[in-house]
Amino acid sequence: MDGRPWLDAWLAEEPDSPDALTVAAERQVVEAWNARSSRRAVDVDEDRWRAFRIKLDEATPVVRAAVEANETDPIPWMSAVTLATGYGASRDEFERVVQGFMHVDPANVHCHGRALNFLMPRWYGQPGEAPAYGDWAADLGGPASRLQLLPLKCEFEHLVIEPPEEVPFDSVLRERRTGVHRAIDRAEAWLTTQAEHDHVGARTARSYLALMHHFVGHHGRAFEHFVQMGPDATRYPWAFYGEPLDRLVTIRRQITAKYAKTLG
Image (tube, rainbow, N blue to C red; front, side, top):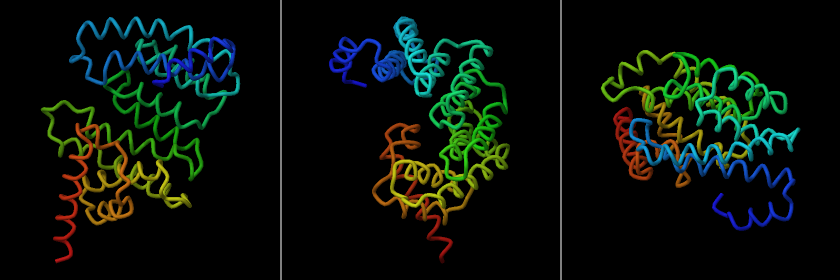
């Protein structure tokens, strides 16, 4: 997305190219969110909010053009979901966007992932709405679909990102334990369908699973995932805590020590 000169040249040469418009739409949306930053809303200053709104307005006609030019491609709809999140779209508008990508590709993991984000309580969802959507979306895909990982990501965010700092982690975990175990089981079953276990999707799943097993006290399973990851851990979910490498190393040491105790 940093390659603005070549994209601008492409658009100048082929202004109606569906592919160029698709790339441009996502670039515009990413630029808007970069202007806002990934901070919580209360920590975003007015200058960033102003820049965010300006860039969202600039992105809107580009996203619309990409959607109209790509009748069989769900990716412009992915950008449309993120645009709707930025604007705080009405529920009717959000449902219109969801129906748009469902019509093109009902099992597209990227579109569903961004729709799930819209429904998180920190954005616009009601309690329980995001987990229900994650389960529903996962059921749309087969056992080998990466949609099976959406409930795991959803439960992780409900444990780590959504709760206010003053709410004890253990109380949140107790409340969500059933959903957490169900999401873990889905993700573990998905891994068994992957003939190649070293692609980025599998490595990301192992990173989330290592953490989630750690949370629920399955230190042996968490250790196994670290062993299978080797040196190829992904940036997320560790980056949610700040510096990803520091957090990964800290958690890996904790898991190794706890697992070692079970071995006597």
